[in-house]
Amino acid sequence: MCMKLIHIAEREGKLLSFLRRELGLSSTLVKRLKFRHVYTVNSQTVFTDFPVKIGDVIEICMDEDTPEYPAQEGELSILYEDDALIALDKPAGILMHPSSSRNTDTLANYLLHYYQTTNQACAVHPVSRLDRDTFGVVLLAKNSHVHAKMHAMQKAGQIEKLYHAAVLGAPEAEYGIIDAPIARKSETGMLRCVREDGKSARSEFSVLERRNGFSLLELRPLTGRTHQLRVHCAHMGFPILGDPQYGNDTLGLPYQQLCAVCLRFRHPMTEKFVEIRSKQTVCLDF
Image (tube, rainbow, N blue to C red):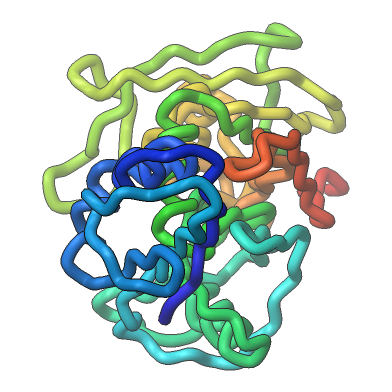
């Protein structure tokens, strides 16, 4: 798969400087593409030390590896799409990406099929991820260049993620920050727990509604640990409803009531502010 980036030079200099400054490629990506013959200037294949002149047309073929999983037709709810990014409204009960034990019926399979049927030479690069039974907004980059930019933004805390959760009980305060380190519960398992020797983890919460012993919370992860919001809510005594691992599933809910309701960020290519909202909501009517 090949997706092209095109830039018309407005100054002179070595191609490498354009790749890093104007086109914003990471040094890692520049090195990875260096010997794939993907850089051209005025349709001539060149290397990174090529002297570029004003008016030259620089093209980069963002060659993506062919995935090891099949494209598969499936329903997608597209919330946002442009040449660089796509945001989906993920339903509960579906995996983001194939695993060693499951190669089909995931969001990635469906998205790959969508790209093929719409003639887009794109790859599947998740920027945000959700657990199988969490639902709401997920953001994916269409090539490794955009993915690297979004990853850097994420590390710098420049992507804001908001969640809604229906929980059993309620915090005493209307607003607060949970600061509790998270570690693996065991060396081989996926479960996490709050433990002093764990990695730093912080989550912000505010109470939106209290009703009949349940509460609707707005949650904002300030760090990005696995299962962070689920673990923090359970640790603080207000577990997420329907969460069979950390929460309370006595109501017989099919999925945990945790929804990624909103993502906010500056677009990596245009720097315009983007806000994407889910059309789904958690349930508090019990």
